[in-house]
Image (cartoon, rainbow, N blue to C red; front, side, top):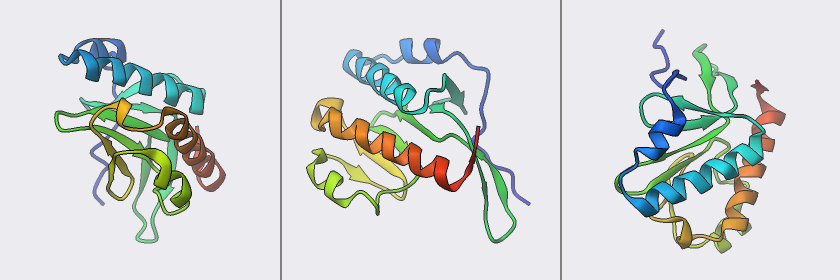
Length: 140
């Protein structure tokens, strides 16, 4: 069975965040990090080389595949800040309608800069996703 490619590492989160070249993206990443720490109560850990993750949950699919992933996290990619909202977005329609300028994937929220969205609503989205994950999955 295939193993999950994204795993927690011992890489320094502080060094990673301080190494973000673009000043505004670095500042946004640090704010998002604080928001996710507030939502999870967990310290940040690197997942792979470029994802900052918080907390952990265990998943198991009907196919038998299982593994561990972060409860929430983000990656300051070149094109956009990518936030991992593991619960997805189907439960949060009214919140998403007011959030601001963004794009989504299955469980990814893409924003160009933090100022493009309402930070209070973003915190609510992160909080609600973490709460959902803790209710529906085995978490650490």
